[in-house]
Image (cartoon, protein in one colour):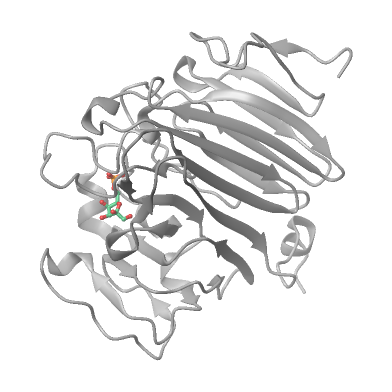
Length: 326
Ligand code: TA6
C-alpha cells in the first residue's frame, strides 16, 4: 500500500517472510502502550480496538456509538513477565496448570509471549490485523517441546472476530488446549444472565480435580457466588444479557467444543494481586475453548482453527439512547 507507514513486525525480530517491515493502513497505528509495551490502535469505520503484541491480547473493542465491550482490570500489570488481566488473553498450549509441570505458567505461554505483526488491512467496514507466534518466538516454550505456528486473525468491525489457527510444524502428533479467555464488561454481575448453555453438562472447577461432570441446568447461568465452570460438548452461541442495562453480547464460535464461564466473586478477586477488590461486580469471562476432553490432536503439518465472534445484540441501546431516558 503506497504511502502506508512501514513498521517492524516485532520489536526484536524481523519477520520470517524476509520482509523486515509491515505496511499499516491509515486505520492502524503501532504505538507504545502501557508498561512500554507495543500496542496496535485500530480506528475503523465500524469500531475501534486496542491490541497488545504482548500475548496478542485484544484489550479494547468498542463498536461505534456503543460502550466498550471488553473489561480490563485497573490493577492489571502491563509487563513482559505477566499476563494482562482483562481483554482477551490467549490460553495455549495448556489451560490452567500444565499436567505434571506445576512450575509452568498458568494457562500456558502464549499470553506471556511477544507476537509478531504479520499484516493489517482495511476490508470495507472491517479492519483485519494478523499476528503470529512460533515455537522460536515464544517465551517459555521450553515447557512444551513441539514445533508449532499459531496464527491469529483479528477482525475489528461491528463484530469482533478472533480466529486462532495452530499448525503442527513438528514430526510428532501434538495435543494442546486453547481458550480465548474473554473478559466482558458488565455494569453489575448480579444483574447478568448467560443463556445458551441450558442443559449442557459442565465440570465445576471449584469442586476440585477428579470430580465428575454435573448435568446441565434448565435455567440460564446467574451469579450469586464464585463461578468457575467448564461446559463440555457445546458449539452453542452464548448470550450475556445484562437485564438492567438492556445490553446483550453474543459470543458465537466455530471449531470449539467447550465454553468456560468464570466470575471470581469477592474472596478470589481479593486474592488476585492484579485484580481490584471490588471489580468482581463488573466482569464476566466467557471463554471459547477446547480444553479437557476437547483438547486438539494434530498430526504433523496438521492445522486447526478456533474462532470466537463477539457482537452486540440488535436490542443493545447506543450510548445516546442509554443517556436519553425512554
Ligand atoms: O478461566 C477460568 C480460570 O481458569 C479460573 O480458574 C481462574 O483461575 C481464571 O481462569 C484466571 O486464571 P489466571 O491464571 O489468569 O489468574
